[in-house]
Structures are given as C-alpha cells and as structure tokens.
Amino acid sequence: MTTDTQSQRQEHGPARRLLGSAFAMLHTRLELIGIELAEEKERLLGVLFLGLAAMLLGAMALIALTALVAIAFWDTWRWQALAGITIVYGLGALICGLKARNGLRNAPLVFQATLEEFEKDREILRKP
Image (cartoon, rainbow, N blue to C red; front, top):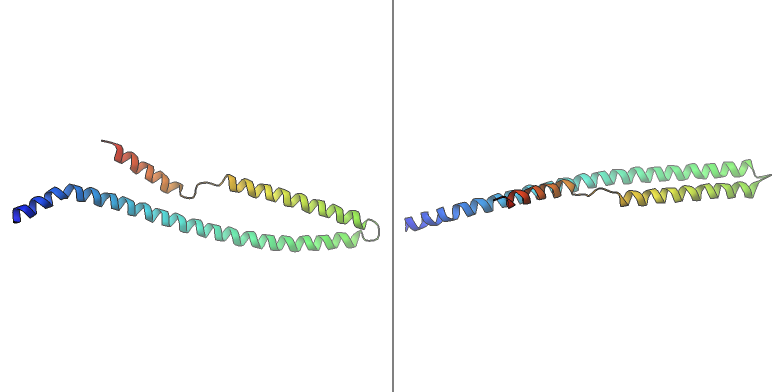
C-alpha cells in the first residue's frame, strides 16, 4: 500500500509542479492587472478633478470677460462685441472637442504591461 501511494505521488509530481507553476504565473499576472487597474483609476480621478477645476475656473473667467466686453462696448458696438465673443467661445469649444476626441482615439492600451507578460508566457510555453 505504501509503494502504491509513493508511485502515485511520483507520477503526479511533475504534473503538480507544472500545474503549480501555471497557477503561480496566473496569480502573478492577475496581481499585475490589479496594480495597473489601481494606477489607472488613480490617474483618471486626478485628471477628472483637475479637469473639473479648470472648467469651473475657465467658465468664471469667461463670464467675467463677457461682462467686461459688453460693458466696454455697450454704447457703440454692443451686439457686434457680443457676437464676436460668441464666435470666439464657439471656436474654443470646437477645438477642445476635437482635441478630446483625438485624445480618446490615441489612448494607449490600459493593460499593455499585462498583455506583454502574457505574450512572453505564451512564447515560453510554446518552446519544446
């Protein structure tokens, strides 16, 4: 009975080691995905906060500028001044929108390092 148990352990030894190594690699890759996801979340929250602050301060500046120009030209060129400001704001919005779309289209892959590690693992496992 002891001999049967020892032979079964020896037969399952290499398979268990291989399976254990595969699970260890998978575990490492999942940890890497978690780290990258946490970093991406932190980066996005920082960018979101700064973007919202910039939008709020920019809107306040534009309101003040609009009031200043409207008051300065009220007696002579009131509608032309307001039309000019409207055109400038519209062009600014168009440029920002196009840049935002370009930024989304050219964004890097989120899990690039993880995908590279999986590719390395695949190449190692393919070698005889």
